[in-house]
Image (tube, rainbow over all chains, first blue to last red; front, side, top):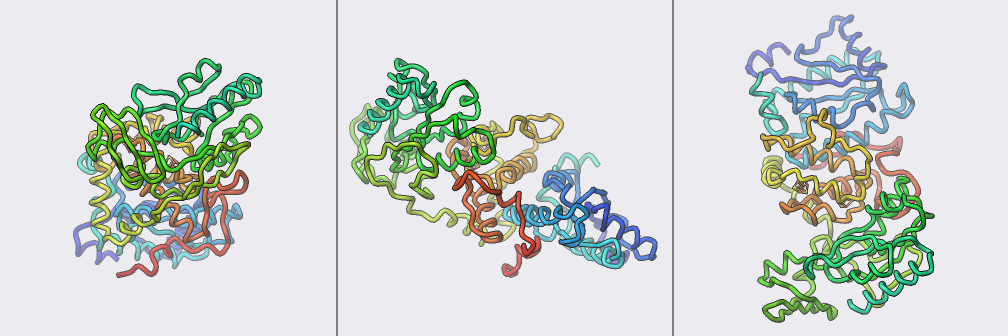
Length: 150
Length: 326
Ligand code: SF4
Ligand code: SF4
């Protein structure tokens, strides 16, 4: 992974919303299993993927994210029974809509990662970072003033 | 049109006089013939200003949220499309069915004064509809249009001429639904590249002056406290940079009414900048129809909306892009 980010100077900002009960623990497992994921992935712990209001995703982009990924429990395994089913509909509609407005569809993603899937977590994050790196900076859905101030 | 107007006034009078209702929601004379405005009539005298003409495009449902909280019943005149909005308000418990008396009225499609102006007619003093022929009198004489030439944008794609809720009706002539497919323009956009779509929306949305009219008029935007009025949200007011803030506003606005928007078309009608907001709402409607089964908000006053329900077999968010890889 290091390779990819070094070759192209651009290192994307990635925000990952991770559900406390599964993917957040999955990230932990990845760490304790000595699997790596890129350091530019900023994890935000949420009680459930369903906690992620679409505004959070937009805000992340506004504040300079180049890609936003949501990780939750596999459908059927939600700690709160049904939360991720709502996430699934909400994000399907939101992502499709963002793309309708011209935002590259590769910048948004939802993945189901359980607490036991440390390896999957690492794979998913590496792949997402690679994809977004190839896309380049998020120019379309960002607030210029934030970028300039940095 | 005048015959219906007289019948409506007659009914409003009777309802107020008998005390069956405490007030009637309708339209009253504006400054000009072409700008009637929503109004609440509480006395028979006030009805002298009552109008119902070709320019009564405004959807009155939203006024009930406030007005119907007052004691006594409220009567309201609803066109077929407006009745969807009222049903949706019933569903969301914003308005209580028992407090409302719905008079379903005829609508042959409302007309656009903007289109008439573009076609060179101004200072309009009267409009007469003879079926498909529209006779416009102005200070400068008489002009004839075909109905299709001057129909309001939202009426071109009228989804139904069947009232979804009513207590009685005043319908003198047969009505026809819109002739155009409402998803046609959404499909055109979908067929464009990401880049082209981005350019299209940026051009459209940078015209936005954040007057909030689209939100204020929307019957689905019925929150007591709106995120756009919260200064801490970062999206409350017009920003100097028009690239992002406006988009953020529009994404949030459209998302908040997703699954609840009845496609009444009011947002596009009132936008002073002529931004085609309906193309945003209809994208959600089209996606919902395609992914979760056809759904028309406001068709019933019960049941869940697509975003407050789910199906275990629903597709994944990534599925929405399947089949469109180029
Ligand atoms: S978003 Fe527009 S079309 Fe939809 S309910 Fe609101 S005003 Fe009507
Ligand atoms: S009505 Fe038009 S100009 Fe006003 S806030 Fe809505 S989109 Fe912007």
